[in-house]
Image (cartoon, rainbow over the protein chains, first blue to last red):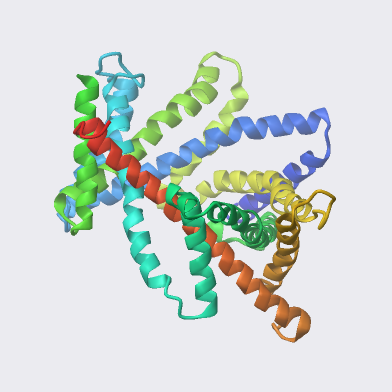
Length: 214
Length: 209
């Protein structure tokens, strides 16, 4: 019951779904329709697991007055505040999730701003990483450097000012040698995914069972 | 008024994040924790609105679709993870999701990651009217893909004409690809940075148009 039944669910579900793809019959389409209806519902409950885990960690931190425990309130208050503002107590100009509302305001002006800035922050770190990585110490590092410089210059107006060949070469690098490398990686990833899929379906890979209840 | 307050709040949080460039500080830490809480809270609200309510609660309350109790119960079983004595029950929904998803994605992965890529690599080396750089590009693309694949093939030692030379060419192709990807990523991040600076100097301070 603890291990065999879940492994059987995986195997039956996996084989059924592979078969339904190759059999365009009404029954197989119905099976697939059930899958598309049920899976989002089941996955939605997994969010409860994540939120529960986050709550447990931060409430534990607050109770123990661990280092920087005050910041845990900055996680917990919006964590529960956002759903409350959206559904239970929609205090706002229009109410609920529509604009303008406190829910919408928090998302647009706090979350979007912080996330966009965090990603843009990477520009500084990527530049410092480039400074260290782009030292033409070997022939391979020089190729890496040249390829990156041509692609970067090819996308900005100064590149076109330096010569029309620069954006064209940048595009050529992206279209041919870059595609060759990407394609090989994609094929490798694809074969890896297929092998992992089969290993999970046939119960060879069982790490997903975790250690709960043995 | 709503927009003005929003821009001020957005600008202050933008500065709070940029303050990390100097060093880690309480303002940055507050913004960092807030974004975790808001993202998770937003995720919960949206998931309820677009999934749980229309797909589960509304159909069940309408009296039909009792079959939806099955995914509902399976979903609830996830929560048993918090009760050590019966936490093994959470394997049932995980198993259902893993099995069916693996089955669904198997042919899709085969199609997108393998067959489509092989199809894309099968291009004519030369056709009338093709420019020289296109012909060279196609040759480099086909041989480069093969060489890069040889580089990633670890079941044979990289020695000899085929595996040895192939893997050596492969690493060159991969380096060009990594350089191009790096350049592309840098430009993406820089454009995000420009966007934030435009927000600060334009929307907030009105220094630029």
